[in-house]
Image 1 (cartoon, rainbow, N blue to C red):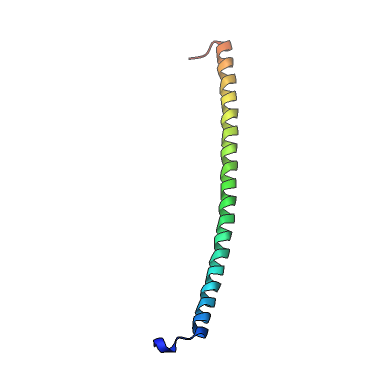
Image 2 (cartoon, rainbow, N blue to C red):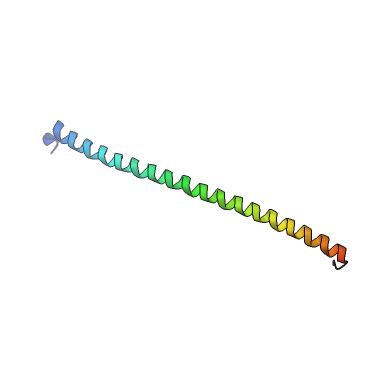
Length: 74
């Protein structure tokens, strides 16, 4: 079996390996792009949550002030 190995056979196998590696490289780049997109969306959600927390805190402060003025605070 070893006697039948030729440079052409090795070259064909190396070309097949190179093709597979190229495909895997393309897929990996696509995954990296998708991950960047997901990270961007996550950052947007976190910013929106922070903004909502700020708005809720402002409403709570106003409500506390109104309750104090009306003398209905607990």
